[in-house]
Figure 1 (cartoon, rainbow, N blue to C red):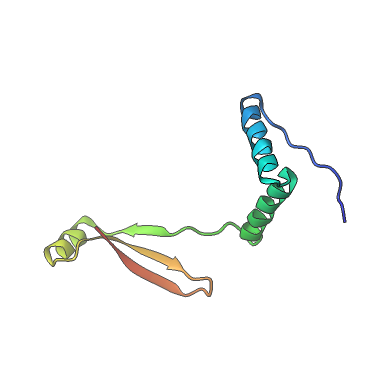
Figure 2 (figure 1 turned 180 degrees about the horizontal axis):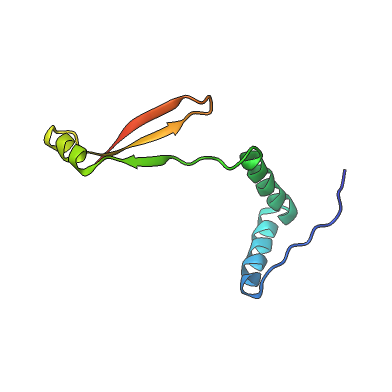
Length: 95
């Protein structure tokens, strides 16, 4: 099924980039449209259910960091994140 044409706006300062993109596609024997649609598909797959979450850092208080260094553990903070199954994971970040 063909949906028809789509147009994109290329600002004057981006025209060289657009021309280079088309030339690279031609050199590779690829369609610029197919490359753009492949990128759009990956973007939609990644964001379909909301924006992916990046790891959030929770830094240790200065006193705790000092104590860990004195104990031979050069920890500067810890990382807390959730797996795709919803499991909470926490790990130390070291120097």
